[in-house]
Amino acid sequence: MVTTGAWWGVLPAAGVLLGAALAAAVLAGLLDPAGGSTLARRAGRPVWETARLLRQRRRGVVAADALLWRLGLAGPLVVALLMVVVVPLGDRVVADLPVGVVWFNAMDVLLWAAVWLAGWGSNSAYGLVGGYRFLAQALGYELPLMFALTAPAVAASSLRIADVVAAQRELWFVVWMPVAFLVFLGAVLAFSMSGPFAYPDGRDVAGGVLAEPSGVDRLVLLAGRYALLAAGAATAVALFLGGGSGPLLPGWLWTLVKTLAVLAALVTLRGRMPVLRADRLMGVAWLVALPATLLQVLAVAVLAVGRG
Image 1: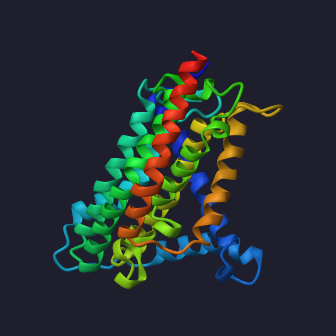
Image 2: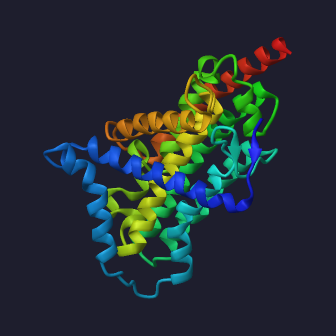
């Protein structure tokens, strides 16, 4: 039984999300060979970078649309928070929406507008190119992501994420829908612009959407990217890894442990794969990932009907 919290519960949800985002940043520092000669220096790198950006003066851009730019820069962090409000933390959830799976996908689409605004509002050619690159990349991963989300919903016969978690009491969905799980994790890396999907902030365009933000603006955008990574990991735990199910420990703690484990896997992958251009990503996504995910959904539907 999942207990729904009041909307003021967004505050603890935000705390959990930011904590997970910080953990992802620390993991990235630990796994980055260029982060320093010792583990302590690597772990402390996000802290020093945060302090540096807080002290750094904001850089102005000629004729920038300040309102749209600020909305775009803050957008990823806000979207990540809106994603996790439907994800159960053990037996509690901020908003137990009957269409939680659709809500998650809708927030991903909202992210398209946020990243594009971050590029457009800066009045910078490099930023605009980065924004359009993200849109091109999103066209590649969105359809496979939609069907990867469909698989657990079909298995649970519900779009409510709490129902999806409850349907995994006997067997986690990752066991019999591994393709959907892997495609979902790939989409998480894509919408957080990480690893092989860091094309929108490529060095060939001076950082793309990261070309112009500085100081607090840059810090907010970077925090949003790590928060998206954390939100995706938490959702993967709910949809495929049984949520808070597990022996001995309370449900909320199992959710956090599994989320950190998925985060560690994502952070490890992001630093060990080459960046894909949007056209190559679309070829792989539509010619390989999409058919494989459709076959996965078909297999899940057949098994679900058989069990019913």
